Length: 218
Image 1 (cartoon, one colour):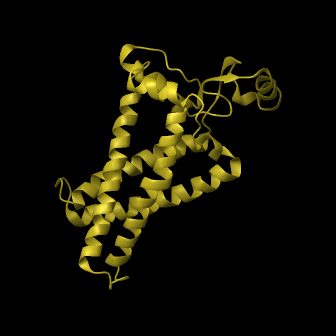
Image 2: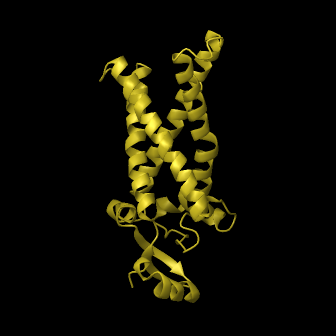
Image 3: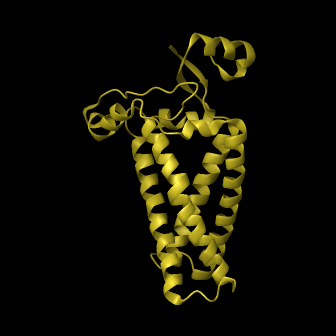
């Protein structure tokens, strides 16, 4: 295998990533205002913006889920045991000693094993907790499920807030890791241009050169 600069992230993934980031920051900002953790905007404005951002993000995620399964890109999010221990050791220990990252992107797997596991947990545990609790809370505020007792409503709000803090922790770690093992700009550039270095077999290189030349830059 050899390193080549190829299109790792398609245009939809990049638009999805940055629009998702903008909406999640909006949701965190307005959500914390609703919970009275800050008073930079008034309560009703926070509720309206929070609801709008949530519905937009839900629409994006529904479309993204459809795209992932129809294009086969969902396979990149499947965790694997291969190279898991070296990658975990790097983030726990090696990263603080300036060691080289043990994982290189490939044509068939753009995420390292730890990234894949993290994204899978986000998509199957944390995000569903946010959506289920948030949508139920919205339905209650609209007069539906009014038979749910007050403690149950409070539990929904607590689950929603805990899940939101979990997303915030993920964002902090995500941004922090972008500052390690190279320049911040080098880490962010692939999600802007779409191109990054990846290991290709001779067969993969020949296929891209012949059938999808726009996806390879060398």
